[in-house]
Each structure stands twice: as C-alpha cells, then as structure tokens.
Length: 375
Image (cartoon, rainbow, N blue to C red; front, side, top):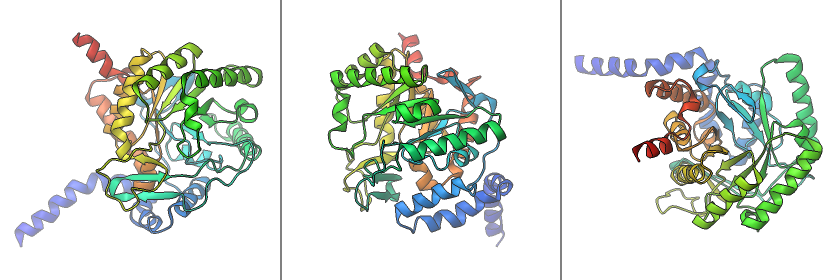
C-alpha cells in the first residue's frame, strides 16, 4: 500500500507544474479535457469552423505576455514573438483579433480570391490523428476580396481605437484590394489543390509573376513587402532557380513550405491515401531540410518563414537554426488545440535561454554559421 501511495505522490508532483499553469487559465483546462475531445468527434471541416468562431468571439484561451527574448523585427515590423498562424486557417479574415489574443505574433489570412467561390466538393479535409497530420483539398474556397477587405478595415479601425500594440497581418493574394491593408503580401504558387498552379514555380513564370505583382504593389501599396510561398516537392534544379529568381527580383521573403503531395510509407492513418496536401508532423523533416537549403542558396539575405510540422519548442528552434526568421503553425491546432501555442512559446523561451542566446534572432541560421565556423 505504501508503494502505491508513493507512486501517486510522484505522479502528482511530476504533473503539478503543468496543472498549475492550466489552473491559471481555466479555458485551457476546458479546451484540453472537454472541447478538443468533442471537436475530434466532429467532421473536420465542421470542427475547423467552430474553431474560427471560438477565436472570433474570444472563447479560445488567451496568452500571457511574451518573454522579451522572443521579440524580433522583420520587414521593418516588430513581432512580440516569431510564431504566426499560417494561411489556410483563417481564410476569410474572420478571427484576426482572437488569434492575436491566443498568442500568435502575427496572422496570415487567405488565400483570398477576387470573387467568392466555393472551392472543391466536400469532404475535403481529413484528420490523420495517428500521424499528427491533416490532408486538405479545399481548393481556394473564399468569401471574396470585398468581404475580406471590409473585415480588415473593421479590424484596423478597432486596433487604432482599442489597442496601441502594433500587430502584423499578412494577406495571401489580393494585392490591389487588400494590399493597402496588409503588412505583407504573399504570392502563393504552391497549393497542390489547384491544377497547374505549381507550374508558376518554374523560373521564367515565377520571375514574370513576381515582377508583375511588384509593379502592382508599387502602384497601390508602395513599400509593402512581397513574399512567395513555395512547395516542399521540388527538384534540386527548381530550388536553385527559385533562389536565383528570389534574389534577382529582391523579394522580401520566402515561406517554406506549403503542404506536400508525397506520402511517406510510415503513415498509418486510414485517410493516408486521400488526395490533397499533407501537413503536420510528417512534413517536418523535409520542410526543415528545404528551409536550410534555401537559407544557404540565398546566403541568408532573404527573410524565410519556416512552416511544416511544428508542434513543440524544440521543433521551433530547429526551424530557426535552419534559417527561419519567423515561423507558422496550423495543423498542431487541430491535433493539440490552442493551448499548444503557449506551450510552444514557453518551450522555445527556455531552450533559447538554456543554449545561451540573448534573443531569438541570434539563433537564425545557426546551423550554417556553425558549419562555416567548422571550415
């Protein structure tokens, strides 16, 4: 009997740190033990919709103040932390304020299409919980640029009125109507769910597209940074060509990477063969490898945003050391819920301090710096 008592005392002691943090935020307890199990029983797209509404109405857990070690500056904008929400989560710009309250350092909305369109037929979103992954084939469903523009204007006005803190919002597509309201613009040439879209990553097509967008940008929203978002499924030639085009056109950043069309033989979920883009943990290694390659190919001169499979502070630091100045999450929200944001930031903060970094920016490209120091 005494041994059993010791066991439970030890178990309680081991978990008390995590529990005490959750007690400080009752919503975290509700999400972890009640809401997330319930959402995972629902159709994935319905659960996604509920998550957007929860963020919109401020029901999701709110984050504590970011540690100063996470603060960074990119594109002349200040970020309280480098972790943003990737495009595809809040496609229509409905939950911007709520996402910042949840703890994100920046928010990217979209992809936004000029006119409303339904996207691909349902079902088009699939959970692979055993693999900590998602497959989606949404196909650019969009409320259209006019509705998203109205929401952005409303949010910007509320920011001026209620919140003096600078917030960074990127827009995936929609230069003319949305560019003047965005802190950066993303050219998405990498969605796997639109036929022939990835052909725009070829050298001549990409160069022409970027330069045309930059011309439009200069006419409508001068000095707004322009970024490109690339696929993880690239040949070595395509990687070098994209790096060369990005350098030649002086793009402000590259998002590495979108979802993958490849399927690892290690996937075990029953949905593993669904058509669409795979995101989450199975994408981590390949997207991080591509991130480091792009950092080396561009000699660290272009800001990189690392995306793909981040679910812990350790994952986040690996991306940063590979060359990412900023990071984006998506799939971890569906797998672990919104409490994962705070956990990732706390873990990243501890790791940065433990490894002797004074600021997160000091860790950017650390792998290449070590490699060069070794030579």
